[in-house]
Length: 142
Image 1 (tube, rainbow, N blue to C red):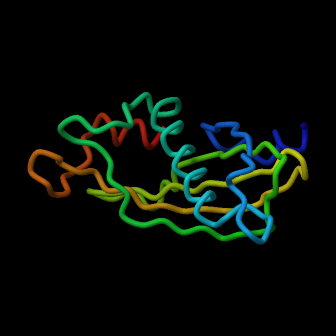
Image 2: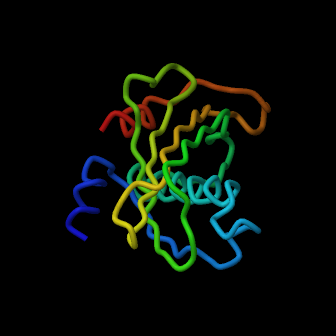
């Protein structure tokens, strides 16, 4: 577990999730869609724990603009994964930010996938992007 702690030390938020039997596909490895769900769970934990922001939108909040996943090796059941998330500070602009994530297999003690996502600050009442507030921007920088 020390090696895993070293892998995630630069990520301010992480979540541990069990790999479910139903996450696997006919090829007997975790389906690519499951990885995207894992990344989603990591983003939700990041906003709740690291930024202390409600991940569920009220009037303004985040909306996913793009997501990318690079698969390093196939996960299988049984396993437990850790999804670690951090801000890519150089990507913070007026309306959006990119997050970098890793999915770590605790069984294999290595990174199973790397993910990046761009989130846009969104006004749900006006149904359009809006500028990131200074309070949120400060939390993203810390």
